[in-house]
Image 1 (tube, rainbow, N blue to C red):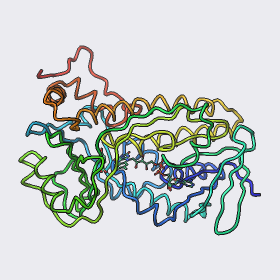
Image 2 (image 1 turned 180 degrees about the horizontal axis):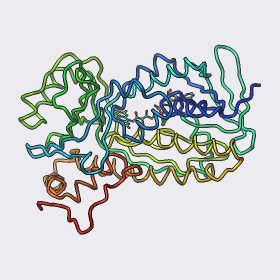
Image 3 (image 1 turned 30 degrees about the vertical axis):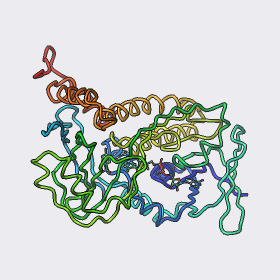
Image 4 (image 1 turned 120 degrees about the vertical axis):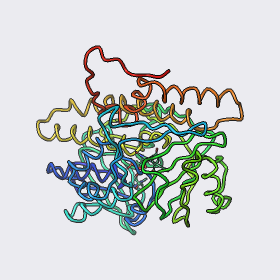
Length: 405
Ligand code: FAD
Ligand code: PHB
């Protein structure tokens, strides 16, 4: 049996960022991942980072390439009723967003681990957690035909929605809150220049569309599709035609198409497990919460959990205090629920739920309200850039927000 301070399950962004931050503070961890490194680094997912996440990656000393190659954005466009309205995030909140793919974050973290010789066990099978409520929990796994056992102080469950960490908590100690949505997103990646300089979120009578990007020569586009849709029903030409049809004219004419290099369908879900701690097991990132990607919050919430947990573990090893560890779940959930609300609300605002004209007119009225009211735009913007880090720009006393409603 080997001994370690922290056992981390899952080498996604949560697990690797946590182990990197702990290592920089001299705290030893081991990461157990059931997939290969190539598989984990090849998964195409998030693309948009809040600035608090950018700061954390820099603090973790894995941000150099992101600062060189990432695209900082000051705003985004909402498209509806055949027109667009720009939300100036920087002006409204003082914050920008960073376009930098999760695949790149994952590679930067992987490279930092390789350079430092940190312990990651790829293709760890049958990972299981034992004695969670004791002060000496254990983790077992197999590699090849050999069984391994690790004795540790803490276990970080960073193993995503389908992982074993959350499932190791007895059902009576965890409450699961869930909402599923009656549609999915089909996403494609293509090596073509993005249709516009900033992201465009589209509300259209045929369904939602999103124009995103990974670089100035690589685009990421999404379309709302039905839940039971099959990728085989979406040859590239159909995808491009449908996207063009959902874009306002000014953008439809500028759309450059090309062969897709990746195409996938993802269901949408809101899910929160609480509390995020049971005994010495701490749930982090998607293991504890999932959001529909509309608000671009999943990876950012995972990073925020990692910041809290790394600080709590550090406080424990520096001074023996468990105050932050005891507060972890409460602190994390306060942020999680606000982001869950925003992602749910933005999803409801932008997607087609039925053919009911009333629902669509209500969506348009709300979008017009955001476009016409500085207060509504500011509320949207501060949620989008990340509520907990949005430092409001102090307004001179007596200054009224300018609205055109
Ligand atoms: P994961 O990335 O799921 O990592 C968990 C790891 O644990 C995996 O490597 C898995 O193989 C491993 N694992 C699982 N089970 C076991 C086991 N039993 N033993 C060992 N290892 C195990 N978020 C944003 O912030 N912005 C966006 O723009 C955005 N866009 C998205 C677009 C799409 C289409 C999707 C699907 C997601 C998007 N997200 C976005 C969400 C974001 O990708 C996730 O929130 C993020 O990956 C969470 O990281 P994680 O490390 O917590 O979990
Ligand atoms: C992405 O680029 O993948 C992306 C961007 C913004 C979102 C969701 C996904 O809201």
